[in-house]
Figure 1 (cartoon, rainbow, N blue to C red):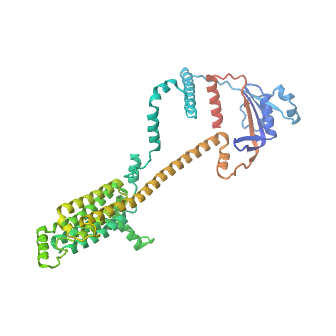
Figure 2 (figure 1 turned 45 degrees about the horizontal axis):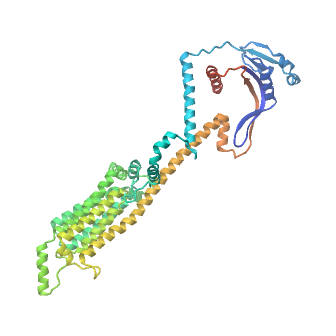
Figure 3 (figure 1 turned 60 degrees about the vertical axis):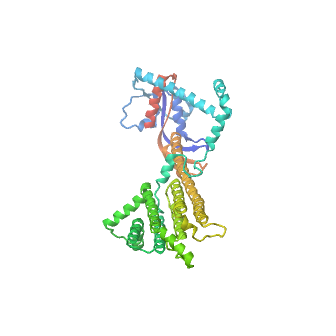
Length: 486
């Protein structure tokens, strides 16, 4: 190796727009290049200025080369040169290391060929394999159709709006439901209305009062837990306040309920059971024989029968419609579960009413003179279920699309972060670290960047008669790695 070193001032900067190149310029840079070209292999050719700046010089200085003495530029600047002899340094490579290096080179060649083959297959013309053509010619049509179906298949199901990817569906349902407190509050108001309808449908007794109290307690408990933190915020605002352990426990419980799908499902099913219990309470109080006897007497003696004698069927149908509505619009419950529960509610109600209490339904009023009473009740249940299905389906679809876009945005952001890191690494391999930071932060596009240095050492090096094989390439790599550390 032939090395030339000179000390002095220079100007450094970055040239180019598409391909950046960091370089140094100046008179002292030219002198360092001349010292390298006029040096001797195996020696370091330095100037007199550099030799004077060596602290505790441990090296033996030899006179400069004859080429340096005869060089016109060095002579015009009156620059004296010296040689520093190379130290005896022998790198011994183990047989294992040589074999490992050779295997590494072979692996890199194989990876390079495989990468080229993959890139060629991606070209519009592709690659041609005779064997593959003969084996797939008879299945080409069916495979093309299946491929098209696979690539055009939507990510969200049509009926139940579920993600095709089960992990994405699970992560979507595990999201915290910050609107849960509004759902339970709406369910509580619906429960109050249903209790009111139960009380006006038949005379209250001790059993019914106890049942109503139990139902209201079950519906009120989630409301208190989920609205307690909001009530504290209304009460104290931004004023610092020390809450008790009980208050903190309620806060944590509310957060746990909002974050847990299982607990939300439990609250949802608790609401359904409470509503069904209220309807069952109305049906249980109905004495079918007494109703039938009073109906016959009203026909014989020409008086109007009490419509609340058994139960008023339209009150019960309105209760079921309200129950179906709450079952569908309850937030952050799997759409499939809500649809199945709502359909089961409507189907169960119509089976019970049209089979067990058909006589009561037939004697009720109708919404249309051309409709029988049972058809009017069934039409209202189906209309409520259908309208709310399509309305809530659109809201659920928008929510899932927004979640999918959110995932895509996060993925693109992560890709952008990885790309920025890759760009930074590439720039650091081209430019010095401090120049990379300037280029990434404050320097405008295509703006010239330059800097001046008053006193630095400039070194040029070249390899003379270097045989490029695996062994020497390993030695060169160690030398360059040492320079990188410096």
